Amino acid sequence: MNQRNLTRVLAVICIFAAFPLAFLTLPWLPGTVLEFVDLLRAPVWGTESFRVSREALLHHLELALSLYALGLLALGGFAAIAAKVLPRWGELLLWIMAAGTALSISNFWGPSISPKTDPTFIFIAVRIPLVIAAAAVIGAVVTLAGARLCPKAGQCIMRERPRK
Image (cartoon, rainbow, N blue to C red; front, side, top):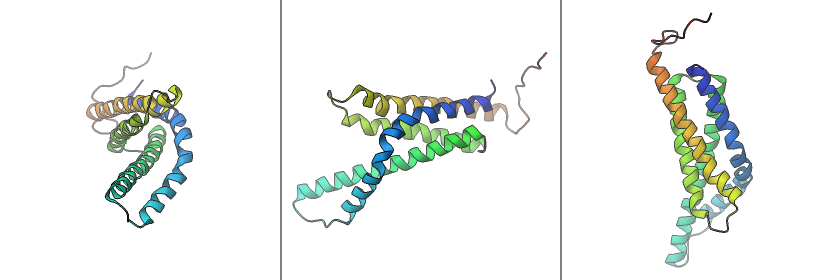
């Protein structure tokens, strides 16, 4: 299997792996946006502990919205990789961004896990993003190796063996 097809397969694997997480979390997106806007517009008054609590919640919502945006961008990028419409440097940047986003999603959900948390939720919210991150790292390495072996399109240092 050549480098172009391997990255295409990895992108499709990442898309399918992201479906359970997207199915679980995307319905919360409108509520997260509304809560963020309401909290941003709310007057800041009260005790110091109230203000600290408000700032912590605001930061948590900002992080959640950033992860939503990066996750959707990564899904679109995986589709672009699968369709082979990105240049190599674009693929490499997307693989790196997707790996960082997947690790951040796993770290985001990690603190909310308790002994009573459903194991399915743990698998979907924490383990699947780690699998996506691993696939993205492999995709970045394959893309980087392909760029080093084929510096210009059609001029590969290592050529495939002719078929008989």
